[in-house]
Picture 1 (cartoon, rainbow, N blue to C red):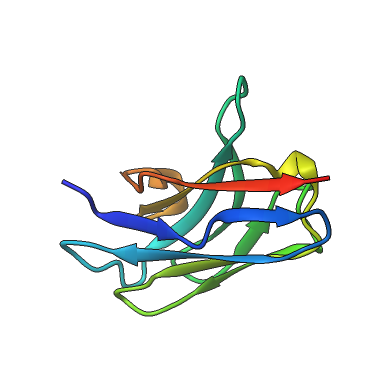
Picture 2 (picture 1 turned 60 degrees about the vertical axis):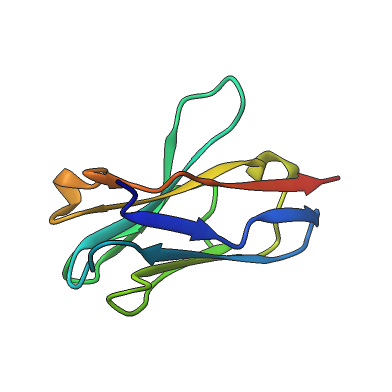
Length: 118
C-alpha cells in the first residue's frame, strides 16, 4: 500500500535546479514530521532535510544553503527545492513521514531519480 509518491526528479546539469514534490496517497499527513532522504549507488540512505511536526527544519551540511524543504498541503505534504545542484547530489530521493521526527520513516515513498551531470 503506497502512502507517499515522489515526483520532480530528472536529469539536470550541474548548477541547475529541480523541485521535488511528495504527494499523499490513501491518507493525509497533516501536522506530520516530513523528510527527504537520498541514496546514491553503493551508499547508505542519508537524511537530506526534514521538518518536525512543529515546523523546525534540519538540513544535512552537504545541502545547507542550496536545498529548501517546505510543508505543503495535507495531500501534498512536502517539497524539496534543490538549487545549485552538484554531481554528488545524484541519487534516488525518497520522501518520508512520521508522527514525530523520531518516527520519521514510518511511511516511505518509492523514490525519484535525480541525476546531475557535470
